[in-house]
Image (cartoon, rainbow, N blue to C red; front, top):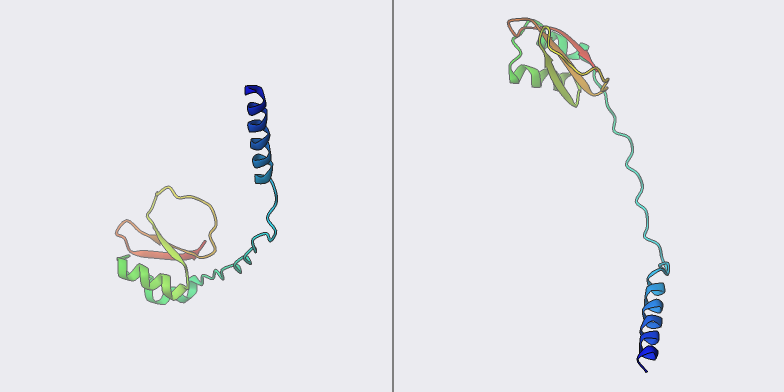
Length: 106
C-alpha cells in the first residue's frame, strides 16, 4: 500500500510540474522602444560668453546650456581624461589659473 501512495504522490507532482510549463494564453505586450534622444552640442554657441572667463560653476553651467550639451567637463592642463566620444558633452579646457581657453564637443 505505501508504494501505491508514493506512486500517486509522484504522479500528482508530475502533473503539477507539467502544468507550470504551459504557456500563457496571451503573452504580455512589449512596449515600444523609446526613440533615440537628440544629442546636440554646439561649442561655438557658448564661446562668446565663456572664453577668457574663470570656470566657475555658474560659467560652466551657462556654457553647457548655451551649447545645448547634456553635460560638461572641465579639463585642466595635463589632466588625464577618458577619450570616448560623447556627442552631447561639452569639454571646457582651462589654463593653470582656471581660465577657459577652448570649448569643444565630444
